[in-house]
Amino acid sequence: MASKSNRQRQLERARAERRLAKRAEQQRRKRQVQAGIGGAVALIVIAVGTTWLLGGFDSKPEPVALPSCTWTAKDPSTQGLTETGVPPQSGEARSGSEVLTIKTDQGDITASMDLSKVPCTAASLKFLGSKGYYDGVACSRLDTTSMLLACGDRAGDGTGTPSYQYPDENVPTEPIGTAAPLPSASASASPDPSPSEIPSYYGKGTIVLANQGRNANGGQFYIIYGDGSNLPADYSVVGTVTSGLEIIQGVAAAGAQDDAGATAAAGKPKKPITIQQLYVGDAPPTPSTSPSTSAAASPSGSPSATPSAS
Image (cartoon, rainbow, N blue to C red; front, side):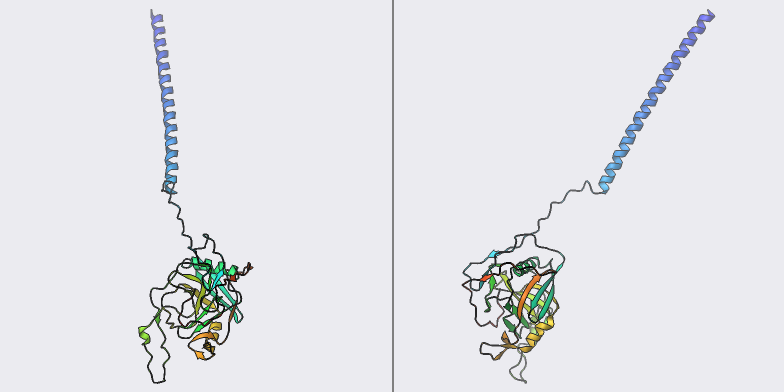
């Protein structure tokens, strides 16, 4: 009996050991599974956190469509019109600065343009320069009261314009000083009105667009050669002369003349100056076919004393 009892105890012990071994194996596998799940969760948390830190869950902003310049074609029968076509409808630069070069028979004039303020003006000047629009065109009018030289008028009578127009840009809203006193009729007379009553919006070296009214800019421009200009704040600022202003000041010093050749406050410059080439950028382009002036243009005439052109 004792022997049989021992065998039963041994069998019971063996079964117990197997149960313990099986339970231990189950526990080991459970821990492995839990460890695997924990590791996977940790990797997911790390990946999600990294993505979040890098802005992966930020809402994607809608792409901003920059507005294109508006080029409005003019009636082909417009007086003084030169057929040029219109600049490209998009692609104009809208940041940084660009150099405007005006090569004349008196020397080179350069100016800096802020493309964030005058993207369309710069695009228009670049386009017209590439067309040879300004080549061989004399600066037709000097106004010693407003201290400006008017250039870019292919018609020569104040009507010259390319075959399109475009809206204003960078028009000043605050005066930068007061206008210089107007010349008196006699040495004892007092300037009238008082210069303190006349605001000045354009400083020495400023280049502005001439126009035929609000939002009607074309190809003509004014170079302001002195401080205290009385030109009203109706014109877009193109940029500022960086070199060659003394050339314009030399033309201004020679004075203006009327149609009869007599000295006048505003009229044709006594010292002629002609643009040989105008371009935007570092190197001059090779001009395409030169534009031709419409039959409606008047090749001659007397320049107006009031700034109004395109």
